[in-house]
Image (cartoon, rainbow, N blue to C red):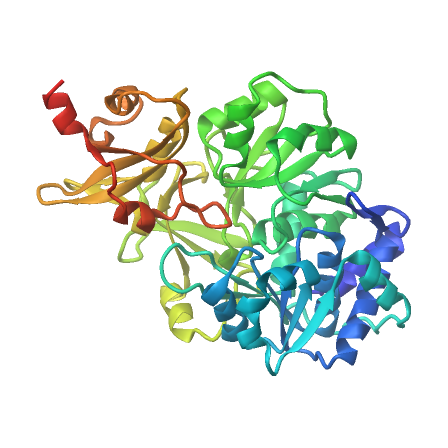
Length: 507
């Protein structure tokens, strides 16, 4: 096992003059990225940062994020990459729960969140930078630090889960978990040094860190950093920077296919990788844009991802097959494997050391509960087919239990997104004295239409017992920063909820 620093130096030596990072304002070669990162390590040491220290990093999508990230890794410090959308107590909780010794922050973010952060900054080192220009000016006056001589099993990162209920948990991963992700991602997707990976998802998130940055670090290809996702600029950016692939999450692909109806193949994009691609969107990406979605199954706790559709093993609608360095199974509530095609909980066990989380930071109870019987229990529902392809059904806690039937909201939501007048949709449980739970479809409509059309549209597309009884029209579906539906909010909000049973009876 090795470390991020070792791989960074290897790419600097092998491909020093090749581009590692491109943004609107600047480009960095692999040699420059390595050099600035090692100089950043020196700066951080001078400010008292030592091996094992937690440092909260608050930075937008820009090359400075990567320089700071690799710089902290070279000390053996633990980067706590915080969601830049956090405010108030949520932001303060993340800084204090990880016992951050320092906060490294972009000045624009500090100015915007000063009132939220000030109560927890006392006693912590605060490192502020405006952007690349001032940061690199400081680093240019420093000598490069000595390369880190630690182990692949050394802690590297804490990323807080964006759970929709309860306090977030800090997932602690080591160098090897990150490197293994890039190692297998580059093999699954046949990523080479000629690729250019577009990164528009926030760099504080597991997805771009483990899927994009680690793949680039593995093969020496180029990262194209965009400030944020934009449908209107997407293909123009892809053409301008000669991008060949990108990573996705949540509704990104649905937004592309719903807003761009005309074919566009005048680009070099060939594939994308991530999770949450409905079947119709998958098909539209291929037919309309010539881009193959490589759907995977993953989460921060399992080292980013554990199953994926590879170039060789690609099955439409699935989350692909397990990586060779992990075991993936589906268990019943008593932790017994279920037959192929039978729903259950997705569980993961590493075959190679240090490929999944080291644990939840300062939360031994959560770590123990998730690791029952020496398997990591994801809390997600899924099925495995006879050939070992995984199919994701949703969070176990989100499964609707109606009259003895277990119903996946994801399946109904996927069907609803095919409706020509629905821009977004979510499905949640509503308590019912007879069936235990009933189904509510929450819909963002592009234009007005009768509520009973929702049920009529779904007939023949989902099983009869999955047809919603209730419909609610809203302006938007509440989501976390990582596009997870905040289902509790939808369950608690009953304003304007329409009982279709009553509508049908009086129609």
